[in-house]
Structure formats: structure tokens, C-alpha cells
Amino acid sequence: MSDKLFGTDGVRGVANQFPMTADFALKLAMAAGNLVCTSKKKVAIARDTRISGKMLESALASGFMAAGVDVLLLGVLPTPALTTVTPTLDVDMAVMITASHNPYHDNGIKLINAQGDKFSDEDTAKIEAVLKAEDFSLSPDNIGQVTEVPDAVVAYLDKVLPIVGSEEQPLKGLRIVLDCANGAFYKIMPEIFMNLGAGVIALAHEPDGCNINKDCGSQHIDNMLKVVKEAHAHLGIACDGDGDRIIVCNEKGEKVASEQLIAFIAQSMKDQGVLNNRPVVSTIVSNTGLDSFIRSLGVEYYATKVGERYVIEKMKEVKAAVGGEESGHVVLGDYSKTGDALVVGLFLSLALVNSKKKMSELFPVFSLEPVAAFNLRFADNAVVKKIMADEQVLKAADEASQKVAACGRVVFRASGTEPVVRIWVGGKDETLVNEAAADIKKAVEQAA
Image: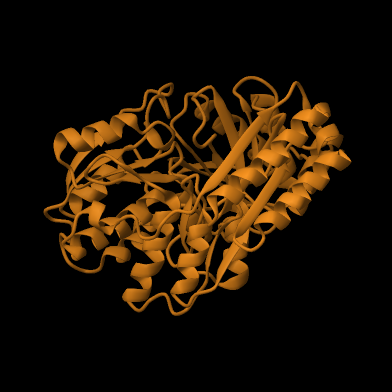
């Protein structure tokens, strides 16, 4: 068994191939049941719509029950809904079965603590140790039970719907295209927007287990852009399979960058008097123009390592109001513990209605600054490791950082999931940005 099963977002793989097998899920649940479920002796499990979800759900439930833990089966539920309701369920932990934006044949297992936050590296390391030793404490006198909880979404909606206020139909007159990715928001999102008065054109809202994220959702927005233009809609919103990413477009079918959305939310919250000088958080590969804009609001800005997990950790540390990354994870800390397409979509839609303007008049909020980026793929991770240790490469990266230090930043790193070296340079001076990126690229290619 691998020494490192958990990545920054749980365990992932291809269904029916290790580690996404029923056997692994069973053992993972027994390990977590022994280590974590020691107080309430209870766990909640939710899943997205992919075909392997029920298989893994059954295996996880069996493992937890074998460890003497009672299981609440929440059924299909978006990740942000699970993280929101977990603290209300009186459980020791929760499990989300999802591979997020990946194709249907992939799946994953995310572990969530009793407070609704993802497990720390320290927690998952302990579970991995038990898994490796296969040291499970099981008793014939201590077997858990299963209870189905089909209405868990109610507690989630009670938390998020106050974002639109008390008016009965605040979105009346809004025409919106919703691409639900054939995922966990397939039913909830169209219903909520319609109940709030919006005219909804729903796309990818008929999951069959194999069509999640297939040519739809946040990773494949071409159809949404096309339908928005053809239907003369006011905007389009696309989420991913588990609902923690959002991509939006204007009435012209033009994508709005996530950095622009983060900036708009921060500015709107300030205008509404609810930002209260709280910081904004994004990542080191977010456009440097976002940094400049947020600081122009008189608000602190922080850039973290790439990954929603690091954004959320920083948001908690500095008590930020909003955070996110360019991939579409956007977090409103007052309403969500993670990226939430419904929360962000409702905030944006209400702001659009209240503005009495078009999306294309609201966006862009700021001018994007030049970026040069290269993702260089190699034969294997051994080559990448050699490159990242090469003195000439490190020297080139350092000199590039110095070159743009006054106007931007350099991000040079190895991918954590594939044999790829990533080069990202952003800043105000396009010539310097391009030169710096090209210098690093040349050094990398020579070292390979």
C-alpha cells in the first residue's frame, strides 16, 4: 500500500481500481471508525451522482458499522451542503464520495471533521498508518446501524437562503442559464432559482451515473455560453459535479474570470457595509491585478499556495470574508465552509438584479495584468525531480523573480499529481513578464 494515499482533497482514483475499490473503502471506514468516531459513534455519508457512488457508499457504510459506528446516509448532496450541515448532525465526522470535476469513471473520498472542515494532514496520516498495518479493532458485540436521512438539504438551505433577504421573489425578471453538470446540484439549484422568481433554463440536469461533467459543467462551458446568447439570458452559471466550483458568463456569452468574480463580491460587500474591512484571499497564480484592486478598496489581500484547501485555511486564520482561486472555487465565509456554486450564484444574481445593469456593464471590475504560463510535461517524475534540483534552473528562476519583483511575481513548481513543471509569471509589465517566463522555460528545457 502506498505511503501517501491522501492528497490535498482526499483520496482519488479510477473506480474499481486501487484505491477506489470497495475493499479499500471498507478498510478506510474501519480505520476512521476506530480512530475518529470515538465520541458520538456516528458518521454521515453523502455522494455525488456518479455510478460508482453507491458502491463506495455501501462499502464505507459496512466498514463503519463493522467498527461499531452508526451511519447516516444523506444520499446525493453537494460537497458545500455536506460541510454546512455536518455540525448540525451530531456526528464525529462525515464522508463525501466525489471526484469533483473529474469524469464519471473517477471517484474520490473526502473526510470531513465534526465542524465541517476537511481533515488535516496529521489526521489523514494517522488513518493511513492504521490502513497500512490493517490493525482494526472489531467486535461481534459492537455493530452499528444505518439510517437514511433524505432531507439533509433542508438544513443547508436554511443556512444559505438568507443571502437573498426576506423578499418573496427577489430574482423576479432575471433570466438565467444553469449548467448543473449532471451532478449533485442537478435538482436543488434550478428549484431554488425558480422559487426565488428567476426564469431558469436548466442544462445538464438529468444525471444517469455516467454523464457527470461530460461535456458540461464548470470544465466544459461552451454549451452554456451558446445557450445564454441564443436565449437572450442575463447570465449563465455552471457548477461542477459536487458543486464547489462556479464559472459564470455575461449576457453576451463571455466567460467572467474567477478573479473578477472575487473582486466583484468584495466590492459589493463593501458597498453593502458587510465587508467590515475583512481580508480577501486568493492564490499565488491569481492574476496580480486582483491584488492591486483589493488593496485599492483599503482591504488586506493574501495569496496562498495553489489549492482551495490552502485558501480556506488562510481565510480561517485571518478571518477573511471572501476567498477563492482561478479554477472556480469561490468561498463566502459568512455562508460556506468551502466553495459553493449556489451561494455564490445567488449573491451574484441578486447583486445583478439590484444593480439594474447588464453583466457586461458590471464586469470586468478591474484590468487583468499580463500573464505568461507554461506547463512542461516530461516522461516521469524522476525527470521532474532532476530539473527541480538543477542549479542552473534554480538560478534562472531566482533571476526571473528578481526581474519582475517590482511589478509582479513568479511561480515555479512541480505538479503534485503529474510529471509536469509549471511556470507562471504575472505582473504589470508585459515585456518583463514574457522575458522572465521564457528564461525559466529555456533553463528547464536545457536541464531535461
